[in-house]
Image 1 (cartoon, rainbow, N blue to C red):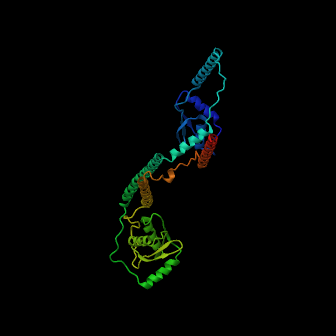
Image 2 (image 1 turned 90 degrees about the vertical axis):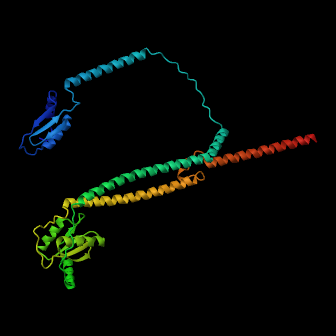
Image 3 (image 1 turned 45 degrees about the vertical axis):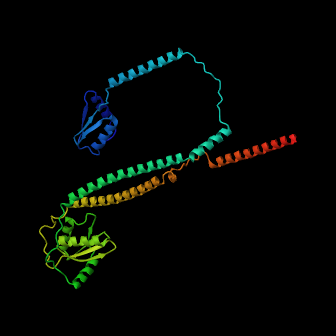
Length: 385
């Protein structure tokens, strides 16, 4: 059975006390049983390591942390006795401890007056507006910009290494691709025949779909198989670029030995119509040896896609590096004259409103003191007269 193997698991654990490996024989021919599910269930119940499993035997390893029952019980007793001894020592230490007198006298915390707070705010605002602080902010902006440039340069180095690896793999695959040259004495058709074949090819329901692998030996073989029953073959290409479609059509024409009739845009893609020719003879070897196989064509397609994506990624990184370096030169050129916007202090510890209110209060106090001194002077002068 697949589940409810507690008894078997207990027997395996008992066997592990004498041997490190337990081997279980599986009875064959029992319906509705799966040795895979049995192995998972035993692994869950015993906690062992599954070494091998086949239709005859299931083998488990007990693991390095397995302890027999006697050793586990001895360790548990030792841990319990140690815990009891620690509790007794703590109890004895608590009974013989000397009481400590705690001074409960409260000390009042000293706080600054409003005048001191206003003075510290004014000093802090002056320091924020100083040229030294502006210089520090410019240096911090430069360091941040340099760190960002270094990070992008590291990404660029990794991308360049991956691009070089993709180019090597692409070169390794393309050495098996040897396209055929254009035939010297190629058969031709008249414009009336080309017009008729184009109309027939557009009405054809049977077609070949050319995917991401491009032209490989299997495509040419399918073309010959189509030409066994009909004179025309229609190949649907998903690529919308007319230049790529023209190159693919010429390659199909040279490799198959047929005659390219037309390339017609349809709703499914570009339709390439190829005529087999009046003197068509089926070759003995349907798959040309100079083209890639299906597997190598897929690998070539993946490497081309990877190479293009990496080239686009590298171009974006280079643009970003140039942009950052331009910004860094601007920061260095400005020097201490202006602080960059991103490095301005965003934490309004001392708001400008409070600082302005402090200045207004100081001005009012100064005016009142001046009026008092003038009044005292006038009174003294009157007494002298």
